[in-house]
Amino acid sequence: MGILKLNIYKEDNKNEIEKTFTAEGYDLMLGTLQDIMAIIDIDKINSGNETELAKMAVRGFNQIAPILRDVFPEVTTEELRRTKTKELVPLFVALAKEAIGTLAPLKQQGN
Image (cartoon, rainbow, N blue to C red):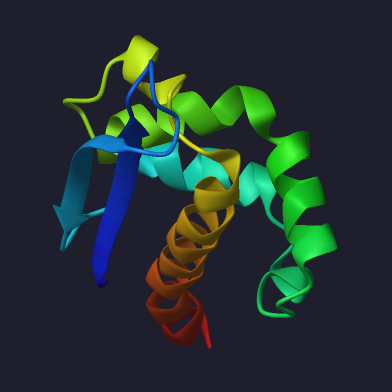
């Protein structure tokens, strides 16, 4: 997995980044994997169709914050409120692709 980034914006200036959390080489926990797989449509995740990706994010809205806190354990609930939604979709897609990638070796073992 590449580097995942989560920008937190200043409360008084929504265009200025206050801090950035990063995660590199993150190992998905089973609970996080289950949450991601409950949200995504595997057939649509690689489509690049932003409308479909946004629909998945909306469908899993209540699960996104816990997933992000699992990936970035230092982030607070208040800081998550100061992230831009347009930046969450690519981050979510990267996490979904990682989830799918972790399942691929299991599928190959089952053949």
